[in-house]
Length: 480
Image 1 (tube, one colour):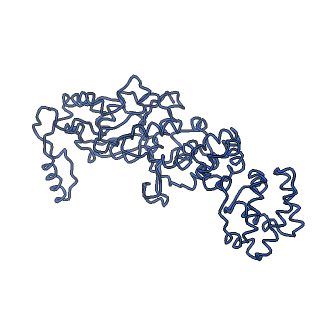
Image 2: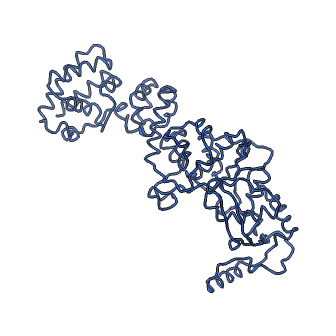
Image 3: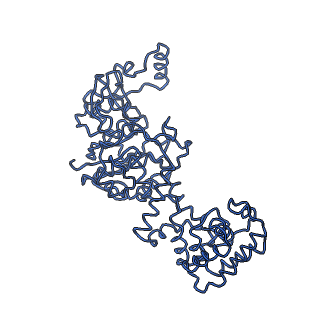
C-alpha cells in the first residue's frame, strides 16, 4: 500500500466513548504501517453541542494511548487551521464553486415552509425529498442564507474496503444543505472539503455514514474530485448484541476506564481487536504488533460485541506483562494514584515489595486500594468471617484459639524472618497440628488480613514483617 494519509476527526461534544477511540486507532495503524501520516481535525461547527474542554480531553486521550498525530492541534502542519470553526471562509469558497457551476443554490425558504412540504409528503405517504420542492428561481447568495446542493439523481456504485461492492439507486439523492444559515458548514460538506484540502487518502468512519455516501459521491463528482478509499467501521454493540453500544449499556468513557486503572496498552489492544483479527489465536498485541499485522481486509463487516470482562482480563495480562518484561519498577511507576490512602506514610521500597507479591492478582490498578489495604493498616477483626470460613466452620472456637497459639509459638522461634524460613515453619506446623493446609493456612491468612484472599501466605507474612504479623495473630487470639 502506498503512503496513506488518514484522519481522526472527532467532535468536541463531551466524554470520549470507546467507539470514538477505535475510530482513531485504525487510521493511526494504517498511517504508521504505510509510512504515511495521521491528521487530527476537530469538527466543531455544531456550536449547539460544543463542550468546553472537550478538545483538550481528545488530545490527552490520544496521547495517553500513544496515538501520535502528525498534523493537527498542538503540532501544527501545512494544512491548518485544524479546527473547522476556523475554516469557514474555505467552505464558502468551495460552495461558491458549486453555485457558479449550477450545482448549488441559495435557499431562503423558511423552516415553517419546509415543514409544510414534509407534512404533505407524510400525508401522501411519500418519502420527503427536498429536491422536489427546490425554489425555481433562487436568489443570489448572501451571508445568512443556507446553501443547498443541487442534486442530479442517478445510481451510484462504489467499493468500501470493509463492506465490499455497494450500489444504490437515484431515490436516495437529495438537495442536502452545504452551508447553514449561521455560516457554518454541515458535516456532509465540510469533511469533503477538508479531506480534499488535506490530501486524505483513506476516509475511515462508522458504518452509520454508509447511507449518506451516495450524496457524498455526488458532491465529489460535481467538484471533479477523486474519491478516497472508503472504510466503514462496524458498530460496537451492547453486550447483548442487539443494538449499538451506549453509555446506558454499562460502557464507561475512556477517561473513566483510565481513572479505574486500565492501562493504555490494554485499551489499545482490546479496541483494536474489537472487530478485527489477523486470523490467528493471538490475543495480546503491542502497538508495534498491531502496526505490523493490521490490515483493512481483516476488519469484520458485522458489529462486534463489547465485553468489559474481556477488557479487564486483558488488562490483567498487560499488568503481568509489564511487571515480568519491564520489571516491577516500570509497573510501580504506573501505580502512583492507586494506592490506599494509608500507603502514603510507607516507603517506596515497601510499596514495591507489596506490589511484587500482589500484581499477578490485579485486573486493574485500582484493585490495589482494596487488595492491599491490610498491608498499610491493621484490619478490623471480624470473628464471623473467621468462624464462617468454609475450612474453619467445623472447628470450635477453642480449637481455633489453640491453633492460633500453636502458630504464634512456632513463629516466635523463627530467627530469619524470610519467606523460605516462614514456609518451612508453616510446613512443620502442618505436621505438629495434624491439620490440612486449607485449615491452618486459612486461619493464619484471615487472622493477619481479614481479606477475602491474599498472595501466598509466606510472602504476605514476610512482607508484613515479624512485628506486624505477630501482633495481629496475638490480637486475634485474645479476641476469641
